[in-house]
Length: 64
View 1: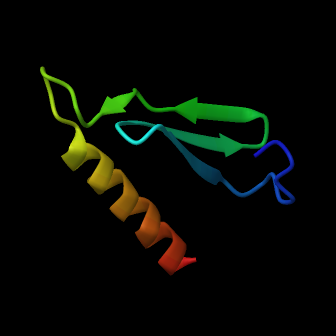
View 2: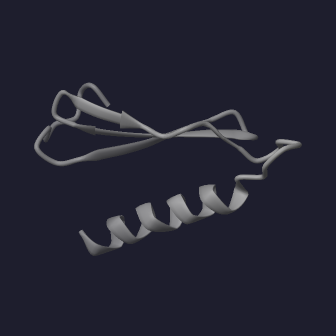
């Protein structure tokens, strides 16, 4: 992500270990990260939030 050829466009990434997900967005030297979304938590299952985020990112890709 640090070597993104066009830093004026946002770049999205996802880090996962298979049961936890972290989403990252960079724009130039600014970045944002999501909360860690665990899909195997005994307290809260974030599978819907992960699916919703992936769907949104997919729509961004299609529209550009």
